[in-house]
Length: 101
Image 1 (tube, one colour):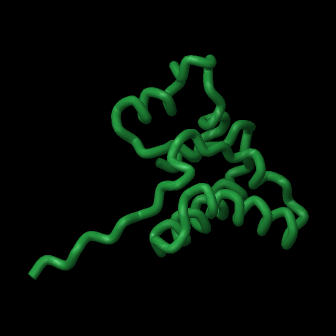
Image 2 (cartoon, one colour; image 1 turned 60 degrees about the horizontal axis):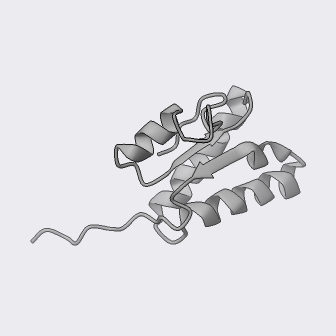
């Protein structure tokens, strides 16, 4: 789950009582969100890039988060991609359903 709201990736306490922890407990495979206040323009670009890559089903969520952090830092000299935290689900990847005949 991509939860793109300011501080959404920051746990409220060590026992995962924050919203992301509740979502994981309810069955979410993982939660990705920023740990700081994020400018809307960057948040939108990051979300679009993450979802586009995730829907391609080639890379895991962890690989995508790492690649995007490096991309924004190397290409645009923007470190904000490193502020996104992935809680659980590092090895998650979108699985395509078999075609219905």
